[in-house]
Each structure stands twice: as C-alpha cells, then as structure tokens.
Length: 431
Image (cartoon, rainbow, N blue to C red; front, side, top):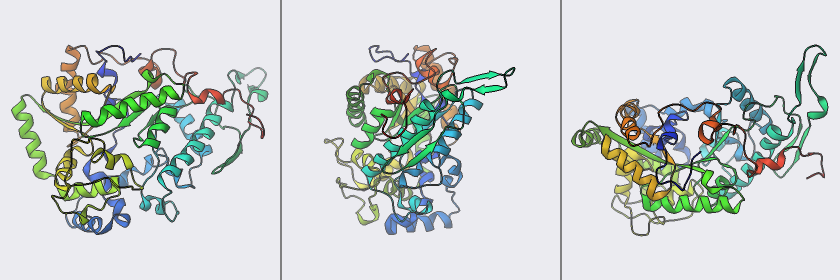
C-alpha cells in the first residue's frame, strides 16, 4: 500500500500512463477544434490555420469518452446518472474490476452548446451539480443492492432476494430519480475514482471523492502547495490523506545520452506551433491571448474555464512572471506540465526528486510524439527506476483498486463518503 512515511515511494505503482487510457487532450492538437466558438479571433485564426494545413483534431475521436468525463454537469445531458451507473457496472463486470472513472466537470461553452444548452454553467455551480450527481451514483452502486442479495439458486429458480434490492430515490436541486440499479454488484461496485480539479473548489471535490488526483503545473514550486492542500482537505473530510494518490502531468524526452535527448527535444520543437499552443492555453484558461503582445506579462483574472490553468502561470508561483511568449513555448510541448529532458539516469533522478520534494505519488505521462515518447520511457527509464527500487517488477493481482491499495481492498473504505450510502433507506424523509 502506498505510504507517505517512506522516502522511497514506489514510482512503479504510480506512473499513471501505464494504468489508464491515454488522454490526447493533454497535448497540443487535442483541444483546437471545439474551442472555435468561444475563444475570440485568435481561435478562429488558428482553426483556419489548422484546416489549411490539413491538421487533425483528435478530440473528435474521443466521443466515446465524453460520457465518462461527466459532460452532464451542464445541468442536463442525455447520459443520466442512472444510465452511466449501469454502464460502469457492466464494464466492471466485463473487466473483472479493472474500471476507473475520471470525473471531470465541463468548462467549454462550445461543448455545452453541443449538448443543447445555451452556455456553460458557472465554475462553482458545475461542482454543485457534480456533488449531487455523485450522491446518486453512490446510492445506485452501493445502496440499491445489499451484500448477499444475489443467490443464484437454480433449484428454486431464484436469482436475487427481492427484500435486499432497493429502490433509490433522489429529489434534489438538479436531478430527480426513483429506480433500482439494473445491475447486480460488480467486483468494485464503485469504480476507482479519478479526478482532475485543481481550483480551490475542484480540490475540495477531489479531497472528498477522489482516490487518484490528476494535477499539473510547470514547476515544483507550483505543485508542492497543491499536493499539501489536497491532503489537508482530505484529512478535514475525515479521510486518510496518505491514501489519496496524486499524479502530476509530465512530458519526458529521453534518449541514450543527455546530448541525444536534447537534440530530440530541439527536433520536436521545430515542428511545434507556438500559435497553436496559445489556442490550447486560451481554451484551458479562458484568456484570449490574441489580445496580448507576445512579450506582455500575464496577470491573474477571474475566468469561468479551468481556473487552475491560469493560476499555474500567474499567482501560484509569486517568484515567476510569465510572458505570452514563454507560455507559448512551454505549452507547445509540455502543455501545462513540466518537460523533463535527459538520459535515463537523469530522468530517473528528476522523477525521484519530484516525488520526494513535492509529495506526489507519481506521474501522468503526456507525450510529445506517439508512440515514441512512451516507448522511450518504457525502454530506457523504467529499467533505471527498477534498478533503484522505485518501479514495480510485476503487475499486482486483483481489481484496479487492489493493484493500487493491496489485496482485499476491492471496494472503497469506510472513511470515504460512499460508506454512508450503504444499507440506507432511500425513501423520502429517510437519511
């Protein structure tokens, strides 16, 4: 089980690119297309540039992930909690407990319009909706079917005991529900919960609900306070803060030698579009960078997009003032996270330093190119980490949750808010 008391955290259980599906949204090309209608003239210009250069918008190929990313926080969506809970239960059955859910509230007006809503809800309202959504999911997964409800008695022709299967009722501000969960309990019941909110409200949501938290920022100075704040909030919510696994976004460029790695990074940058990177950042931050001079410093302002994205390059590090030019160069390869370049030995040392100095548990690996970035990491960096005793040698058995927390822990623990929905009468007026 991961622990914070040891200075030798097993990065092998934490390099999250090997634990979850790849998310191309973390890199340059994945965010262009859907931002056109909401980010000003700069976005329109870049969209024309992309079309004229026959570039691709990978986000269009991520439709299947849209339901999993909680697009329903616009206030209404075709995928209700009832439907999504059933999908996850089915997937958890089919994979014998290998399913996780990255709970992400939406932030784009263009996406809201695609769901039939005039505009996106305000930032904090989105989290209020998500809180109620989670309550319903917990009721369905944990409260509808009691332990022992399924008997599969062929002789008596009884599949389940009806007195142990309960109707769930929710009459809230955003959702109305009265139904039984349509799936018997799956191996994990509730899938492993990931969350990526890094704003103040997002951190509170993560500290309350998430088991694994994605964060990002350009430096250790930005990341360390975020990690400490999430753990403090988790403790305040009655959870064990050492068991919240936190993964920082990172792009690794490596080769056989330090010189070769830096030459590789220079080659990558020769193909990158800094103008396109600013569109990426406009979508994330809500700031139209076309209204700024290239050498103009960026200051913090209240936006309704990903507030943490702007904070990371403004108020999070008081000793650093970023210009538009610097943000463009950084985001063109690394997005919002750091870029680490060097030989396998240098990379291993830097990853270990990040773990020891910021208290992160591991890294959500982004890519500069596919699949070479990941192939280089697996071929060069993993063996180096294994030699240092900081990366696993074998895959752990069991469900996805057990792979991270150990045998016998397929279900969420008693300190998680899900526990209060187990064995509860959900009729109106009951707790």
